[in-house]
Image 1 (tube, rainbow, N blue to C red):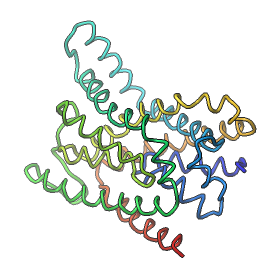
Image 2: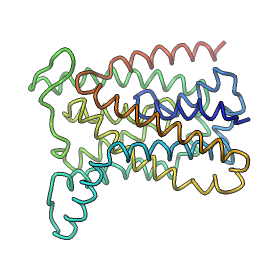
Image 3: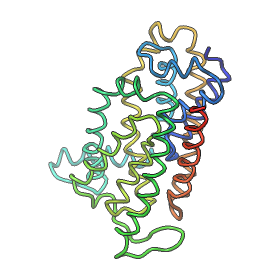
Length: 292
């Protein structure tokens, strides 16, 4: 049963873990399983579940929070795209950033439409989520190591990197590459923001710009997927849970806004390493827990 208490817990979990590089989908499987909310765990891989309709609402809440937080940047991006379309040339770096975001959104959007349900049905289970969460931690740590090599010619300091490339200097192919990394987030346990940041670091962005690009890139994917499935909540699957969905979406939105504010500042001077260590430790704990 999806009570209001559970709605608040899942909403808070979604809002935080969607942006922290620790996998919202993985935690939405593992935490309910650890708490003994077996009905919610089972509903994760059901194609016709009120719980999945609820998750649509909290994803929309998260996306709205990201739009609100980055509203000034989105206004510049959309304005730049419209101006460039009229002039038939780039009129600002914001316009080029908009094109890079569009290109980077395409791979995960297409693959998600075709394979999301199949992957959720197979992998949205505690044992699989624990394995992929551990793998996510390894990816974050390896990404940091690769970043050191990529940044060798611009210098490294103990609390972060300086001298990285600007986002609008990325080529179209590099944007496509970073967008392809998002596909990994279809596996419960792999973080969308984390794997996208690793892709950005690999192409020479510093942590702050890699995080900024990851959050901007996540917004249309999360919002688009949510709006695409929102009719489920308006239909029979929403019966009896619309109030919980509204509460969950509000909690998720507030949590996502606070998380974005914190992480943008955090990645000005710090790295993915603590999150990598956390994912490996929690993932191994869960693998052992569910194995016995």
